[in-house]
Image (cartoon, rainbow, N blue to C red; front, top):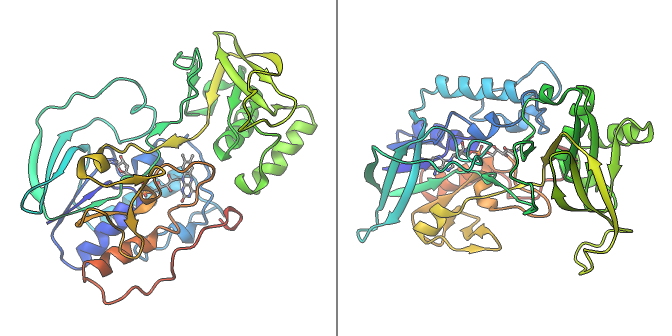
Length: 366
Ligand SMILES: Cc1cc2nc3c(=O)[nH]c(=O)nc-3n(C[C@H](O)[C@H](O)[C@H](O)COP(=O)(O)OP(=O)(O)OC[C@H]3O[C@@H](n4cnc5c(N)ncnc54)[C@H](O)[C@@H]3O)c2cc1C
């Protein structure tokens, strides 16, 4: 018996391939189908081209050039129904260990949400009861890597008016919002909140947005809104404190990342009703730790030809294989499809890998 943990796009794709070959497996998911995508803000545009995130040969053809979160969730739900996938929703793997007999002992508990997103971050530890334990021969971890936010660790970060998730934009209409971050999430939130009538200030640590890191169609709009004075952008900003009415920090003369004199600069206080800290997310590593999968630079140790880890019988696929990605995301749905093919090959379910080898994806392509 194989256990797939996680029913995001790549876990689903793996399950379909095992179903097609009548391989016995279970697939468990702590939340709903594709719970990571569920927690994106409503109306988020998916930057990958639709055909590149289609799975199992089922066309994904939304009405617009780029799909929205809602289109992709609908598509994934329909794929799951079409293949009658036996996903056990709201079941979280809370513990996993290798047994002396080379099997894996798994503890599974009812769960109220997926691993990741605002509910996971709510600082309300889940209590587990009705725990089911069972053994499997192999484990495929498709657990994703956006589980908890990268925290800023400044005073005020845990206040109710501060969030690491944009959520419903309408909530911010007519308010003053300060957004901290320099990636796509921060750029997109700035534009969307401006359009619902928020007064937005975007602060980031560098001299400016790095064009290669931001979706190509967002950069010109951000530039125009800044030039027209419709949003305010504050580069070289070092966040120090969040109060009920303001964001406080230092505006440095230039990008001093990596240097020690972080405390030098001009003190700045930005009036704010709400603060969004969109500074990225990291992966939870408890399952890796329990299984003995070693991490190097926050990335699980994997043979990239088979996706098997340093623990024989444990495979990691999808964005989970990238670990916590710092300084740029390189693993997406579109370059993770091949992970499924590699596992099938490693399990002797296909003769050889036909797909092209892994390659980094240039964000401009997607
Ligand atoms: C705003 C936003 C926009 C994005 N846009 C894109 C995009 O355009 N293109 C793209 O490729 N990527 C995008 N991403 C990243 C995207 O979310 C991932 O690429 C995609 O979800 C990865 O699929 P996956 O199957 O590898 O993992 P995920 O979709 O993250 O699925 C992992 C699943 O595992 C479950 N899980 C984890 N641990 C356990 C456990 N212990 N027990 C049970 N279940 C567990 C989780 O609940 C989750 O449902 C975006 C991310 C954000 C935040």
